[in-house]
Length: 372
Image (cartoon, rainbow, N blue to C red; front, side):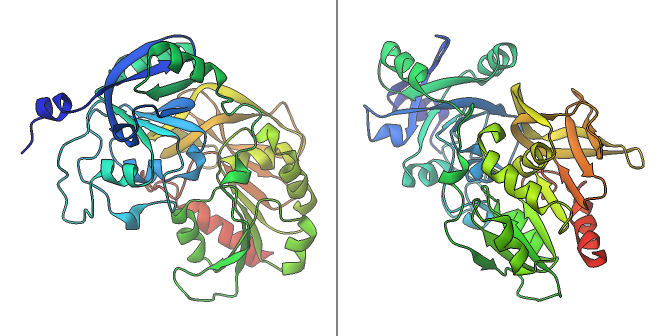
């Protein structure tokens, strides 16, 4: 087996440069191997999951971001395309401490680096991700650049990166045409209209267990959705700043009280904005699979999967009830819009990757639709 030392000796050096001037040394991987002048930019965030790297890379919610994994070995068990959340990697780049030279898993179809290279994704490995994580946790999420160019060139690229603040990144990941998702192919007298802001495949799998799923472009009008006669409306996860998506919040406001609604992640934030709540950018966000959340209904504690840089702020909004809170920092993790038959959670109950503590949310949505 190829040793780790040889793995790095055979690779050109690369740099990760943050917009505040901090520099991290590493080695080129992925698309950086073939193109020495290539530079990848984005907002750098760290993910604390020990596994699920394929699901993370292929999650459309990471559009516009460069993902740094805190777990030191990324790629151990290779890639099984069936596990991907989207048709390609949606993040701008990947940062790792180490890329194992050879994956070990009977399901593996290829190694993680080859998968990323085939999609032209820049990767830097050999980075001190512990120092990087501590820096981001202290300073906050920053724009960055990775490449084989000199530090000055990469710093300029990082400073020129737009980041995610006030950026509409949904337009780049949403479907352009509606389609039926029928993973399980069984009609159940329930039809879910799923607004696609960057929806994960595993979420569609869970929804298809409830009924027939029709996936809609993010800019679909409330009138068109009502005319469909759907049993309920699902608001998906997605990337970017909810404040840049008032056209979607307006649509949601027009739907409230007319049809049961459930939102996840960005969908949760947009539902909140539809009823007058504010959203804000967090210091470094929640990205991982081990976040403790307290359900205020029944005093239940759930370990959850999370991926968001923005959160909801509520100041005594009439008719809005907080249902879940994060035990680490008290971020609002769930809402119920009273008298409007609408619920939402900030975390990811589909648990891909992550624990299954929160799957009951989908059952609650099903009951809302059946009782409507």
